[in-house]
Amino acid sequence: MVRHIQILLFPVLLFIIVAGCASGAPAAQPTPSQTAPIQPPTASITISGFAFVPQTIEITAGTKVVWMNNDSVVHTVTSNDRIFDSGNMSRGATFSFTFTQPGTYEYFCIPHPYMKGTVVVK
Image (cartoon, rainbow, N blue to C red; front, side, top):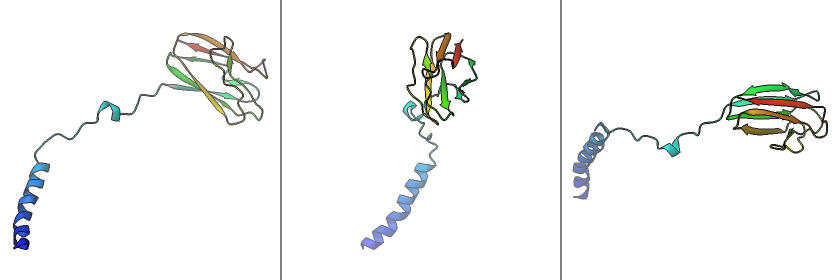
């Protein structure tokens, strides 16, 4: 008897499932928390041959600048006004800073003060 009821209910359940899928109900939309955050634009500066390459870079406000040390010695990326300071960076290390305000930002390397660079933010 139970088997007979199961056989009779199966087509009904199948119909309910298929009808529910084909009902035309819109698919669930992602909520804002499911969307990927917008990443700021990025610019790169390489530390190579005891120099910042490029030495001067022009960016727009909101841009993240990433410095990478490709030299075999420790360097720093230190702004003249101490707004940012990477600390000691070994070979392969990176440092980033996001520039939110327009202006001209000069920086240097503490162990090698002749190494200088400029970030111009528009």
